[in-house]
Image (cartoon, rainbow, N blue to C red):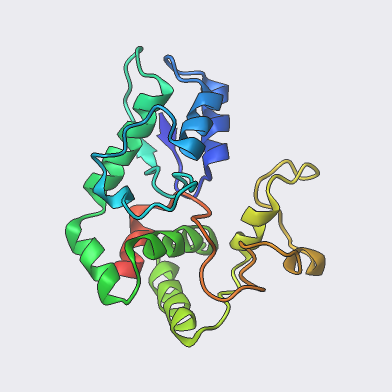
Length: 201
């Protein structure tokens, strides 16, 4: 299975629905992400700061996953969390703290950078700009956060409506970083290692 960086969990589920691999049910996959039902998270220390009721959006590490025919939805989610734990090193986690943000805040910011950047070399610059805006108490004003809050766009057949209208930018949502100061309440995508490293460095 191949999960692309920047996919939101619904896009991952749609991919699973299309390829129908092993014993993985796309709806069960989404339910586990949103409720953690049937999943033991005690071995994942990095999830200790996960707020009650929050989803696992952002923690589903993108990449290639070899699976066997017995793999079910819970096993796949566990594999993705294990990969996240392997890739996001203790050194990176310390570097987030050195930037004055928590581990979860760094993940949310990385998820925004993943969707905002067109080229890899833009990511460190964006990280610097967004960190400066956070420190100054300024709104981030990032289009992808608005897109995430709007949800699926039936007319365009996408989760990421573009272009955004003035009406879209004025929609009241905890994810609308044109209207709120600071970070949205959760990740808007599942970011790549490069986006996380951009913040750490």
